[in-house]
Length: 228
Image (cartoon, one colour):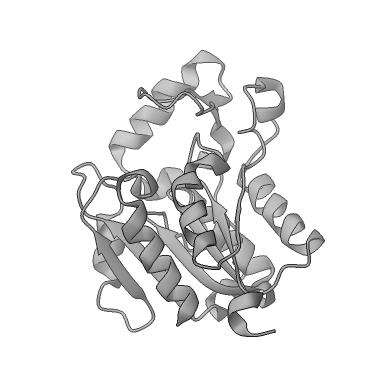
């Protein structure tokens, strides 16, 4: 089996979203001959607050680790959007031998001890606080037209990630930066990495939801990464 047939994209969505967030690129990548597995993380399948009380960042990381292990997946191109950047970093730290590449799609890039709360902006910290008021455990869905979004477990945004440094074994690291939205909390991490030889940087002039706003460009970038 050659490298191309061995590789698989595993996609981790951002806050409030499920695997459906990648529908716009799934068919495009499959037509190009790629395999893609888009995950919905625990607590985001349905609006079940009792379940969400027990879910934190560790839960999400371990869920992906267990899935990749159970399905015996290797040479994984692990992609995370937004909050999903914390999850893919944690997964790579636990099972670096299974990961070929890490792709941060306008996503948080943590180091040991970081959390989504720490890395994000005041705008989003305020959103988290205001949104958690309805039950104390989940962050309500922000305003918008997408009806499939679900309340997000608050603990996943607050918990600090615990990393041993194994994720640094993954040499293929890409940041896809969406430059077209004023409220982005990702500008500082883009600025810190844009000239680094350890990172491949792509810029798309669109808003945060790259999958929806620029699906063709995102598909091209991911296809080229897989073919490299």
